[in-house]
Image (tube, rainbow, N blue to C red; front, side, top):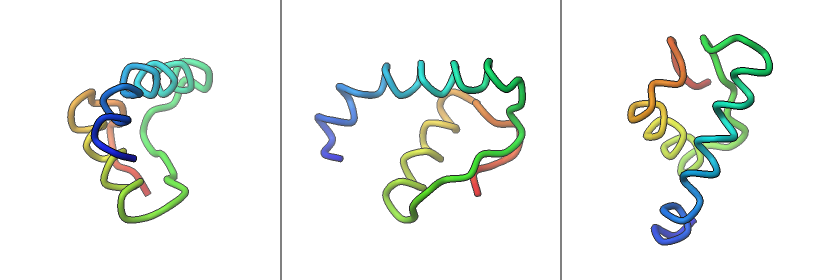
Length: 57
């Protein structure tokens, strides 16, 4: 994703992650499908919004 697209989509992505956490009630682990940029972006979001009590795998 380009920086502009990331900024435009961030609210949607954050809200989607929050809905998924609320749906399953667990927030100790998440599996990332992809490496590199996907993993780095999800880790950045997690550091900013503290979604997980552990980390992305």
